[in-house]
Amino acid sequence: MPKAILIDTTKCTACRGCQVGCKEWKNYPPVATKQRGTHQNPPDLGPYNVKLVRFSEHMESDGTVKWYFFPDACRHCLDAPCKSGASLEDSIIQDKETGAVIYTEKTAKENFEAIKSSCPYDIPRLDPKTKRIVKCDMCIDRVRANLLPMCVKSCAMGAMTFGERSDILKLAATRLVAVQKNNPKAQLCDMENVSIIYLVADAPGKYHKYAVADASDSPGYMTRKEMLAGVFAPLRKATKQLQG
Amino acid sequence: MYCGGYSPTEGNLAKRRDLTQTPMQAKIHLYPKFAWAWPVNRRILYNRAGVDLNGTPYNPAKAVIAWQDGKWVGDVPDGPAKPMAQGGPYPFIMQTEGHGQLYGPGREDGPMPEHYEPAETPLTKNPFSSQMSNPCMKTVHASEYDVLCKNGDPKYPIVLTTYCMTEHWCSGSETRNGPALLEAEPQQYVELSHELAKEKGIKNGDFVLVESLRGKCEAVAMVTVRIKPFTVMGKTVHLVGMPFAFGWTKPKCGDAVNRLTTSVGDPNTTIPEYKACLVNLKKIAKATEL
Ligand code: SF4
Ligand code: SF4
Ligand code: SF4
Image 1: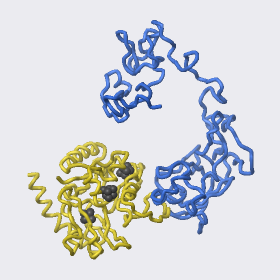
Image 2: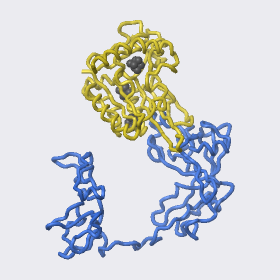
Image 3: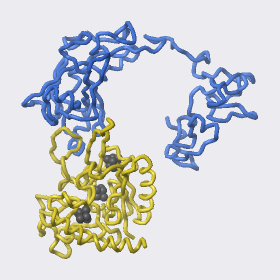
Image 4: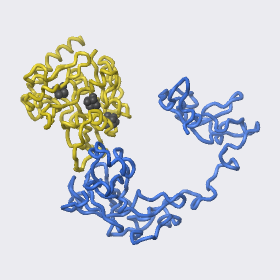
């Protein structure tokens, strides 16, 4: 049965337990960082940071301050656009059991730019040492051993819930109704197309440029837009039909 | 210490999220089945002080506890005794006389709460009292660093507050050795408002030198909407904030903010007044500590 994770950003305190927990579990080396006037550090996802908590703050017109946190990582798209950027059959595979999109060691033979620019969420990164393309693997090793993904496990706020896709969709719908009461703009980001579903309380763009797969302002935008139109469209149709 | 927090039947009681309550409990927002309170899940201390000699609440609309049909209802009674008319003790069971106290014996100051300004203040007059700062505060006079600004010192007009952060524990002397934590919070910073940044010509990410009468400390400017200038008695007072998780033992992550703070303690426990002191700051082109 496919799995999913609900990331309820309204419960996230930006403790970065997930960011550090992920990197510790993967045994990634530390990255030298500098304070640059923000808590978001490292500045971006990288080969040794496949999970990154993004910070954004806004002064609203009524004088209230909004501080938004977005624990960013691969969405494990149901029909992954990044796969279409690959030339080899088995460099990017999808685990049948969980739906996890896995980058294998064969990604070292792929064109990194082609794969990166085909991801609507700007996720893939290149490991300069191994030449492999790197991203979150849904902690497939842990999940197969009946353990929670490390980021979910380390979230003391309960902002992340891992489970069967059908259960997570129900939970997501319930939480959306609750959050929408005080936040009319709340939404579930690209729920029909992804396994990692973000609940945001405000316009997704106020959290992160690539919070949703809006291709209009993506870097490799034509490619992405085409990808999205091409890959997500049949899927949307299918979901619509399913919903009747 | 937390004996009783795990029950053989219910497991970890602190994990309970049951919001059920009686109508009486609802009136005071008491949720006895949500989480757990040491030692016996009593939520309000000395709660028998809220009832008369017969156990009838003084304020029935907001009753914490009441004696009904030979037992207490509402909160768990503090001291499981009968009402005083039936021989129960005074409600303040941890005090020798059983009475509430405005002024505990052996305390250095009191009895009534008072607003004092910190030992260093940007004000020249305390609007709430003729006494500017606590006359009983503990001060240290051991070295040339144990000095305080005069009230409203124009050389140091900015208020500094200090705090800890999630990524480092306390002064950070241990956690700064954890590479993943240092990666997430690598260097000393100073949070300041956009207004102050503009006044001082500082941009987000610039190096800043923060100075007090006692010392200097370099930091990276974090210009944020989360800090806003105050208006106090008609005057704009700027606040800046710095964490106390950095220090010289880890090179290039910045020095300790305690180079700026005062050596002043509260009258009873000498808990240091690190939450407020006076500083000034300026942009610097190059940093040596960062
Ligand atoms: S988020 Fe990007 S990298 Fe992850 S599966 Fe989707 S397209 Fe691929
Ligand atoms: S699922 Fe695992 S690899 Fe992916 S972000 Fe969470 S901890 Fe990191
Ligand atoms: S561990 Fe949870 S609360 Fe902490 S940053 Fe990650 S999602 Fe947010």
